[in-house]
Image (cartoon, rainbow, N blue to C red; front, side, top):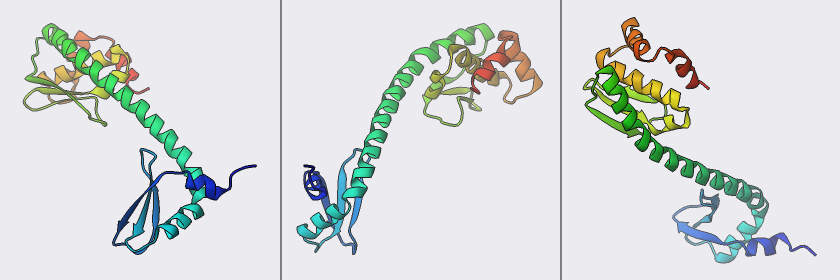
Length: 180
């Protein structure tokens, strides 16, 4: 014999948060916690009845939230690994290509930029997104050379790309790796 939905809901742990509101609401947080937001004067019995009434919704949404939470933890772990890898890999690459190209940045920073892999400030400070480390080393090297070239040419002129090509003849193939 299967337990009734009421018995299944009673075994659910949920937190009640009361406030100056007129209606009752239900939320499943990113940590898969079930929160019932209720008016200050609502009885525990009415709250339990509300949760019972919403048991179908909870049964549908809780597994979805658990799946999202699991994926979020995986992404968080991957992000931590990419950040660590960026701090270990990018500064030595900047130093290596800086010596080869004879161009010295004023600073090198690792950022969380989402829309660009690298940038060069007007004061020749270089920034690289840790997200770049999700790409092959050849692509990372291209971005390093690209940003170093901006120290000499603060634009994307023919002279800028000629400078990149001088130190990285296969830069177009490396550039394509970023568009995968």
